Length: 320
Image (cartoon, rainbow, N blue to C red):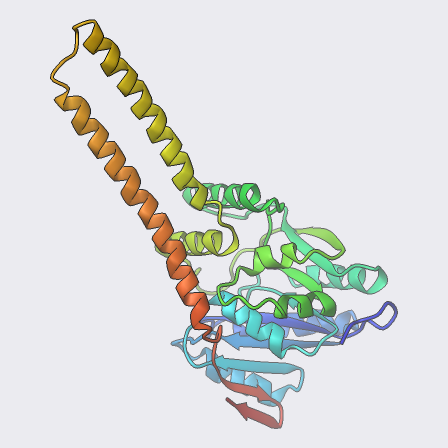
């Protein structure tokens, strides 16, 4: 289904949820109130990403009470990227909005996104961070480095990008046709193109609980997404090879000249340094190549991105 100009109506608001027992009811109430006040037809699609707390119990009750709420339950934790794509697959709206469950993506901005999409020939309305809120300096620096690498490798403008965006149905369909299992929604939704408008928002404070991201999780997220979306790290191997060749050439010429002039030393330290340097570069290069081979291995197995255990709508319970 493709939303045509003048026929754009319902939006699906997709909210991945992982251990958000204290947030889901409040988030649903806040978003519902704002949508009703602005007469926007909507549905809320909550995706429970294998939470270990009472998140699913709350979502199930909410979906059974309100026909505008759909609750999707994974068989286990598959990660936010999988939750996003499960929400896109389940959504029935003419457009889909992705937002976080902690309300750090302000629901009021959805109204602005909706008006831009409804009244213009725009397929993607992208939420950009006007600021990054109260973040630790290390986290902020890591994020800036990560997006600088993505920008350089992909040619996309990912500065201040977020998952908070509205996608027209044709952009959603284009995303869902992409067959890869290892996904990076933030970059993939930019890669598909289409007419895009930007809106800027202030990152709100998290009202309940703490962020689920750890330093280890962020590093893993960055490595997985960089290698999933670009082959640029493979070029590091080539660069290391060139650097090693230049160093070896310089040392080789120096050794020959010293030999001719009769000034050559025993050379043992030079040999050790060269051995350590080349061995380190070889192991580093093998590590990068091995990581990409592991990604290929994951893709060729063709396992599903996620497994849905339950889908609950009012008066309609589905199991898979």
